[in-house]
Length: 288
Ligand SMILES: Cc1cc2nc3c(=O)[nH]c(=O)nc-3n(C[C@H](O)[C@H](O)[C@H](O)COP(=O)(O)OP(=O)(O)OC[C@H]3O[C@@H](n4cnc5c(N)ncnc54)[C@H](O)[C@@H]3O)c2cc1C
Image 1 (cartoon, rainbow, N blue to C red):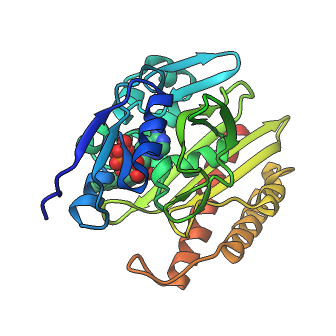
Image 2 (cartoon, protein in one colour):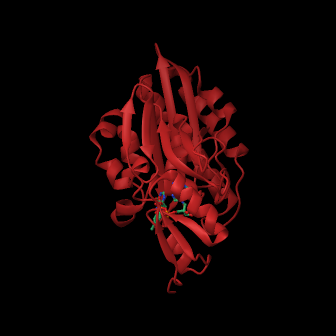
């Protein structure tokens, strides 16, 4: 289907973009890489008269790394992340996760901000950010900024926890200063992942001291469970198998699943069980 005619407005700043969005209301949407938005428009699922191009806003286009952490502007493309040597040095597993998203055409224009704002249930970055304790910087028209955790930002499919007069300005990741390890894996049978699991683990003297397990792309939103993480803390080599089994069982039984074209609830429970054990084992064996 052809995209119906629309008017494109090029925003000069975050505030300018939000003001334009407020001016045109429900007739308008932010436009970044367009990989999701144009698809939705072509399918006739939305009828927008105005697109607000945010790709040229300087503040959304930069990557910085300092003692306070890593900041990636919302309009930075996946390719720019893949080609950033500072990120590759500090967070190689993050860059590797990004390199596995979609295909080169999508990664050339698709952005981290667009992914998280769209809140598709099958999101690699949302799962990864949950495991590392990532945060988002949200901007509003009055110039105010708030920092919110990734945990809780997706309240349902395609439902980011943001008002219409707000936008994602940047994504924040902690630097890897703890010596911990993050492992992110996905299984894809078609274009988008059927499951994504990310696990952060750190250990001192052969014992796990911190763990965060995130499971995404299989339920309505990416999730983590305190009880799963608590089961992994304290693991030593001798208790690894038994505790991994227990943690995976808790994850499998706690997650809310539904039957759909990607498989039955039973099949998805099996995926969760298998991938939580596999990915947590990799992360924990790397730190023990
Ligand atoms: C073929 C294909 C395969 C894919 N495979 C994967 C995969 O394996 N893993 C995965 O995680 N994802 C996958 N995706 C999803 C892809 O990662 C996202 O489409 C992309 O990141 C969206 O970014 P964009 O800049 O193109 O967003 P756009 O399409 O420009 O925007 C998407 C939505 O977000 C809004 N928006 C954009 N930026 C902001 C902002 N800064 N603040 C507020 N709202 C904003 C827009 O208004 C729009 O509603 C796939 C997509 C395709 C088409």
